[in-house]
Length: 590
Image (cartoon, rainbow, N blue to C red; front, side, top):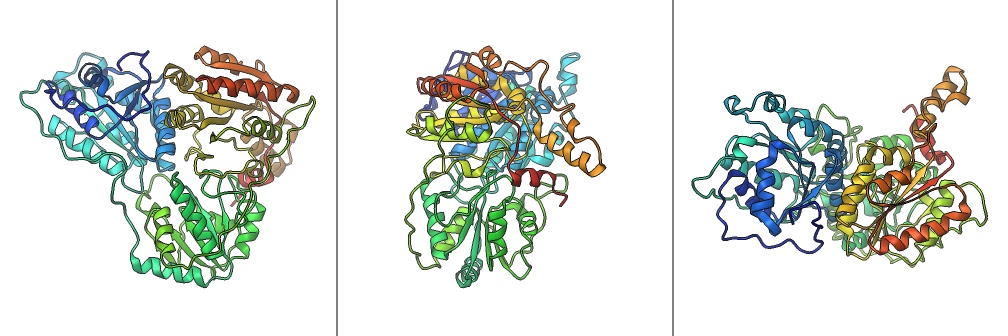
């Protein structure tokens, strides 16, 4: 599949043609990508990897990896990010020299903070100055190109021969798939890609999919942690990101029931535990809510399973130092001095250096089974009938009523979302946030997740803020080009409202005019045509919808179109506002 009209194949990767003889350096690189089982490579074209591009078109053919043409490098990375959120496996991304890398840096930072695997293939003009074309190769060549992203990728390299490039790609493939996962970045010299081969290079031995062996905690540490938790009268489990498979989901439920624990989840992490289960603490959010703080204040032991910002959470809930803390995380293995995404330091009573779900498996082996809870998912809230303005609560209720009989994956939710408004009963019900808070990632991540979910029977739905949508809208073109069904609902409050909240806080502290908090924040005069922007990418666009009396009918039409294979955007104008926990979390001093 070699043209813009080629469509992504949702089936297994095609078998590589083993009888081909690579003639150019980039041909051998494609052989390695195929051996890794990489199905897609997201890219915006660039001359620095023209050799690789030719090999993908004329050497690989239908055997792949298939190119996903993107209109911006940031979208290419975001698509790979969304893919990894669903599959747990890396997609490949190609970035054009230093300029393409600079476009992609924010999306790479998001992927780094979200700890997702990704094989990023960079390229550069000839490192040998004698081979550079006048002007253009010089401005697209850097002495240390990976220095731009070295602080937020897991590993990088700039090899200078075909053999070294094959070795580097194999190493990057191993490293990105090994927990704690994060993107890796390898720069391919354009001269190496275009080198004519005189013999067939030896390909390194590699495997496909998730790496078979992952870091794990010692048996002694697991036993100590299990003893602490089993002795606790009021344990609390903090659930961060977890695997998307149903067996891991079931094990988390078994662990909570074996411990008799309360369970707190996080909207940044996605669905990791059934929110209607009696053990679940109401009100998951992007910041800790009052119910969660109360549960933690009453705990005599805390088990943190990959929880995002454990130190800040314990401090926010004023958990005494006397409360035993068990932390299952590999985060200390990625901490560096540049980025502070490692959050505050926690002196845990037991540190389990393992993936959280591996720690769950280990702990269950030491615990007596609990009594399985019987519970029934709560009924969805009823939409308010009749005309009127729309707020996020009404948008949630109406969307749920329209999707009542549809297996849905919420790819993204906006910051003002009330975690109580929608129950999650499956590991793919909700995928979580973007990691780094880099606005503009939502559309691209939606496309990547929808690609991974295609033919799964689940309908991908993203509820995005208007600012996020406007920064990334061109990513939708790739979904249309590849015929990837998805529904994007824009919760359009005509504002960068996050910053209105901050400006209100500053004005109050300084005794100034709070009514002017919107100045420099409102996306109005003119209001952008969000549905028109979707149609400009080839998608179906509806809106703006300003009256709740119309909302359900428009959403039903949109869902019907998505189920028929379309990419659809609905612009829903909503009232500004955040939940109390969100507003407090954004403006809290410490």
